[in-house]
Amino acid sequence: MRLLDRSSTLLGLEELGMAGTNLATFRRLIHQSHGIVLVTGPTGSGKTTTLYAALSEINSSEKNIITIEDPVEYQLGGVNQIHVKPQIGLTFANGLRSIVRQDPDVIMVGEIRDAETAEIAVQAALTGHLVFSTLHTNDAAGAISRLLEMGVQDYLLSSSLLGVLAQRLVRRLCPGCRKEVPFTGLEGVAPEMAQANSEALHTIWEAVGCEACSGTGYLGRVGVFELLPVTADICKLINQKADANAIRNLAVQQGMRLLREDAWDKVRQGMTTLAEVVRVTREEG
Image 1 (cartoon, rainbow, N blue to C red):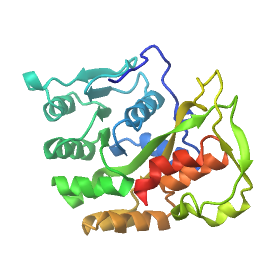
Image 2: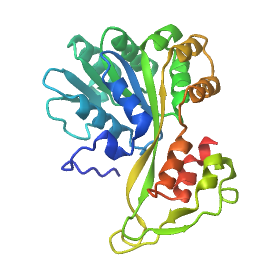
Image 3: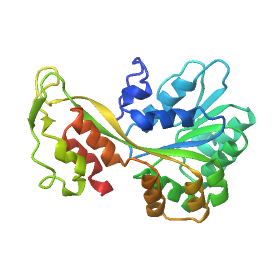
């Protein structure tokens, strides 16, 4: 069961937990005139919420924005939103094909599930549209490999893809009852997370529990992000059909911060706990 508070105000990018270089770069990507911006992560990682925040930021009366979703989760003023209905042939691919004929400025496709949808999305981006969509991959570099595996031509993908944002959600510490405790190091809990900058950290915060947070110690959630902008060097790797590891390594050399690093920053800021970070990023090791 998925419960959505449709009466709540849509979150801005800063409220999602995006900050610093990631925020500035993502803002630059979503204000481009054409290309594809992808958001990846497992089910329930906040991908749709991030895309709605992006659409809200660029939404204006001068822009024709159309979405095709399964289902339409929130109503956006001034945006044409379409609900897929496979029973009558209204799939992501067929709907996207019809949308492109209406000459929109921005298209949001709820999810790229098959080769046909991927191909139409790439063609739309190449013909002057800004396309947002999601994929189910574990990290940003994996999204590029997935699209190549789907059959998208490497030269078309390198010409259309602007960037990939991978994300997870961690529980946010309740500010009313969180407790500061001595930091004893990462070796015993998550040795793979040990970093040089953790040496300067003397305390971290732990969950306690109070009436405000129903005794859980946590109140709300915050996103952790990994943003891979597609640079000229990344394009060369795509054209060579390089694997995800090669793309990830080059992106890190060019300044990409991994999911775990962004999550660790949120531990340092007292926003979440070390246990939460280990829980959501353990598989990225």
